[in-house]
Length: 317
Image (cartoon, rainbow, N blue to C red; front, side, top):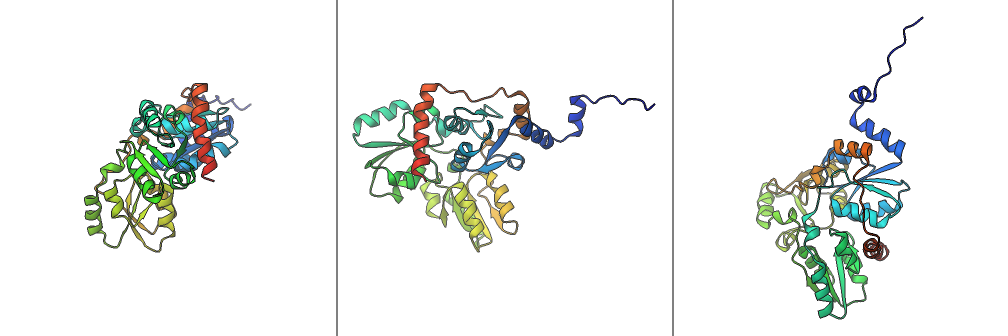
């Protein structure tokens, strides 16, 4: 009789199975969908079911049937997914991954602006906390901000928290009066017009593609201004073969996937969001195993903040 072989323990099996295979197994077992932002590391984007910018991922979070969402992004993104899906479990691989800009507005300032301006719409960039969304009238992303703001009946707009995006939107919607906050993205504001010009001197054939969170000086020397997804779409559709990219470097993974023969250059070696890079495949796997970092929000706060996101999805259609 053949001798019985010992059964492998889970720990022994894990040594021979890759992280990606383990993640795939958990996804099927627990009905999980993995969403990742373009700014996460390429290794995280590679294992995600959907990769995109904030607007795309907000829509996907609503549309997918899965009951568990693992959101590979910073804190406000997980909050937004939960606000749009109160009945779903939203897990964050790293709860310390945060966006400084999300905290650069205050409820007190919003209330003061409302008192001083009768006909004002508080327009909140999705890069903000749930508390700020709850105090706002509508959310926007860089992909839909112009469309949403233009559709509002109000003549005055208080745009929070990012001043650079707010001024970009104001230039496209001159019929409205804008009030700005003093928030900014620490990654995009490290890109300077001087740096872009120096990079252009090294690669004179390149088109400059910039995110509207960049400073007005950078936008002034750009050939195209648009959201992360807009930059990818423009580069892919363009007959040009070389580009200078003025946004976070994580976008390179998708740009090279879609355009393997084109060249992409960044400005002065910066442009890294270290919060996004905190997320790793190992942390995704750990969260699928433990499921102990779910987004939890106060019910009353969620209802108010969710309204601003619902308005965004409605007006941006």
